[in-house]
Every structure is written in structure tokens, then in C-alpha cells.
Image 1 (cartoon, rainbow, N blue to C red):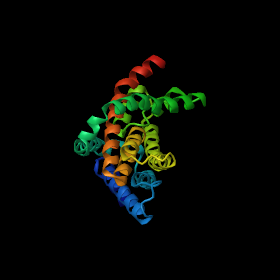
Image 2 (cartoon, helix red, strand yellow):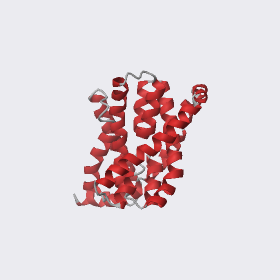
Image 3 (tube, helix red, strand yellow):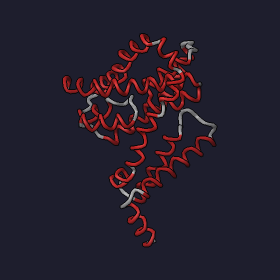
Image 4 (cartoon, rainbow, N blue to C red):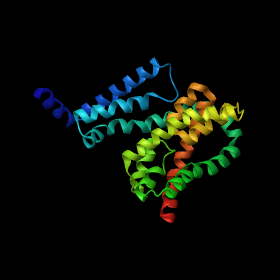
Length: 237
């Protein structure tokens, strides 16, 4: 047992153990996702996160894990950029809908952050919680950067971002069916604008057009929020 503890302590000083634990937890989450017949309420990233928590608690502290797992966080950037491929394939449709897309973005992106902040403020949340909640609808690399800039709590922000994506993946298709909206472009844009990468992954399962427009909305919402949220926060805080 002492040798195992010593080995874990040695490995924790390098990125190897945090990265290995992350990949193992995600793979187990993916297996569970497939075993349960791909439920929308339990995507692999959520199942993997739930499995990762006890692993970290048993083997190393969170600060050490976060420091070592930054290599994986870095890869989120290139992965987001890779979504330009389906956007290019749908470029003709996107160009035809430029005005509706621009209007929806300018209305929807502020509402995605503003409604959540308003509810939290009415419930008495402090500034740190509000700063962690504000970037809930943008992809994780942008959300982490914005949270640090606004003075929020990064682990709390990451959890809120993941929860937002899961809820959007679950309820956006249901709401569209309830409203009798059958256009994949509308569904995809709604999912990307509100649910970032997690909802975008779900959108690709629903159709190529839904995935492409979800990717578009995720990218535009991230850029829009990164530019305007710090300014709005400085004015309001």
C-alpha cells in the first residue's frame, strides 16, 4: 500500500496521472452512455465527471489535478476551431440567413447570461457566484478565461457550464417539438447559443444541419460574450 501511495504521489507531480485519470473517467462514462442506450440526460462528459470526482479524492488533491490536466484544457481550443469544417459545408445556407442569425445572436446571447444573472441576484448571490454564472452559455475555454477575468470561481463556472449544456441538450429538442418547430437550423442554433459544446455534440446526433448551425451559434456566442461581457460587468458591477 505504501508503494502504491508513493507511486501515486510521484505521478501526481507530472501531468501523467491527471491526464490518465481524465481519459479513464471519460472512457468509463462513454461506456456507461452506450450501455444505457445514449440517454440525453447523461452524456459521457457528465458521467465521466461524476466518476472522476472519487478518483481525485482518493489519489490527489484538486489543485494538483487541475495543474496537470491543463494539457487537456488546452486541446479544447483546437477542437473548437475544428468545428469550422461543418460550418464551411453549410456556408451557403448561413449566408442566406445572415440577418436572422445576427438579430437572434444580439438578442439571445445577452438573454442567456442576463436572465440567469437576474435570477441569481434576486436570490442573493454574491459577486463571485454571479461572475461564475455569467459565462454559463459559452464553451469551456472561453468560460474559464472570462471567469478568471471577472473574479469568479473557476471550478464552479465549469460545473455550471457543464450543467447548462446537459439541460439544453435535454430540453431544447423537447421545446422545439412542443412548439412544432421542425427546421434543423433553428434547433441547432438554439442549442449552440444556449448549450455550447455539449449541446452541439447532441445537435450533430440530430442532423448535419443542426450540428453545423449549433457550431455557428456556439462560436458566435463565445465571441460576442467574450467581447461584451467584461464591458457590461465593469459598468454594472
